[in-house]
Image (cartoon, rainbow, N blue to C red):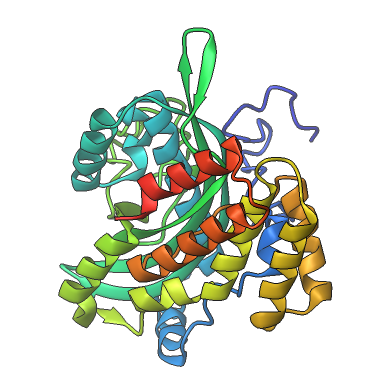
Length: 354
């Protein structure tokens, strides 16, 4: 049957009831990778043998389990949370998070100032750990995103992030160990208990069966969103409950430190809209020193000129200070630190340098 023009956010065929943006019956777009991720980033993580075996067990025990689907659900839920942050409406994320996570995230939303994302996209969403605790199956998903925030003030826009900036957070998802096969997908507005269509996106109870939509009895629900530092603490207290997860320090190593530094130096050189000869010489000198092929860095230089690179910082404070010092050196190499360069340095110092 032809799809109606007003299919709406549920994307459900009115003739047969199929969710049209589900990959069960056809190819659908699942991920768009930014160009700069192809130039320097390493793939997030090759899953260890033990982790792969445990995932295989889960697939065997739960026929509806799919790594790609889990990562898609984590992406969807994560963006619902970000939408709730911008609009300062916690109810938007209510269906996708546990009660405990809802309380924690609501407190964060209510305590932070109002802002708008001028840019927001996900670079990488990868399952990095599985475990069991308190009769729940647990999944650890690494989410790397890039963003730029602004604040609307009367008739002007104040930029909070001088350039587009990258961050990595960890999403914890849970579902009951004895969960039955889900009859739907709340991320596609379908009740996991009965398969009924959920029209009100803010309702947490199914209008047909009364099932709590944010219950882990049948569906994977977000139990927490953590910074890498918070993940360090969580991992230290709960490592015994997980099977071969990627350790916190390994997540930070997946993007080589020299890549952080070189990427950010190019951003500094380009932020004022001009590339002086001294600045290009400085970039090429660093490239040779750090073992880059000059052919490889040309696309990066071009992206820097077009303001397409994203600011990236490791978690390690010492590494951050070294990278900041290199950016200072890059800014002054032409004997003139422009207003734009100084603004970027000030922004980085405020956000990252303790």
